[in-house]
Image (cartoon, rainbow, N blue to C red; front, top):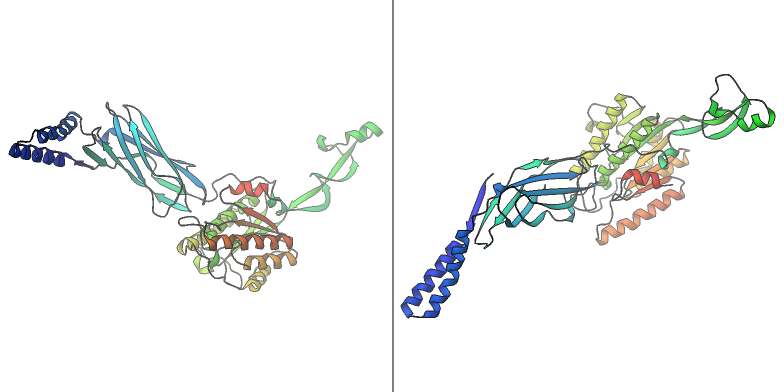
Length: 436
């Protein structure tokens, strides 16, 4: 650890010498008395030992340790005085990456630490997907007379890299909007929740399906059938077009990044429930994906429906391309729409399996996703739109974009599409479960 020291001795010495010299020449007693002030200052500082940053131990912690894109993360620096003397003035500045914004608190702090005592500096950040490396914090100590200071960069215990990943949280439960896609009722009876019929008891029937009330009335055993549900095919559509590649504020995740995260979560939830799921991405060229994947007639990558390991690998590759595009062309002002709503719908419908459900993840920053969802609903597909909100930011343009987005949500709901309005200050799982 490099240590830099500074001192105010030179000014105090100069003041004492000048006052004594002038007082001697002029014979002024008051100047001799005034010279005592810097002399006392010098003596006090000489008696106080110079502080050293090496006497401090610093530890950094992240909560949560592996956040999802857009999730608020608390950074805590714990500074411990491991020396046998009190440090009355300890200044700490944590040095975080330039592209990671502080949303609450400050990475700067001022502490006073007794021997063995610890102090903390906490603040909150929002990170986009990827690894974000923090530098060692700067620490400056001053002695009690404040005549000198020492500045250093102490080594940090714990971790200095914040890894922001999508798909690391628990898969959301099936109470919310995603339950509306991925399963469909059948005309046959069996195990389930909705009553279907009653038939004669057969040896081996589940005891929980025996009609005990009928047995009490008639004395005959019978078995209750419920309406069965079966897994259906679902296609997740992630919106990575140019208009989505803007963020609420500097350093925040873009709409494209959050759309990729929402698509990943929807895919994981549906596959975990035993469904066959495919995926495509708007605004991404098939040539941007490694390995090479099938494409639709518009040249967009297409992952056929499935639930095996190969399908998961292909989905991950496509969503990585969406994130990369969103980070490379990060905007904070609205971008022009791509157009081609009708063509998007036709190309997607050509690839969709019959009666497949669709989950569209988009920040709804232009009208194209509304037109696409409306076309798919009109064609008989059940559509759920998961929309992360990246509007706002306190600017007139941000407020106007927020109003336009709300109007688009209303139009989608009028078209009978289900909309999950995701306030990114809340976990996505809470938005999925709370929507209707």
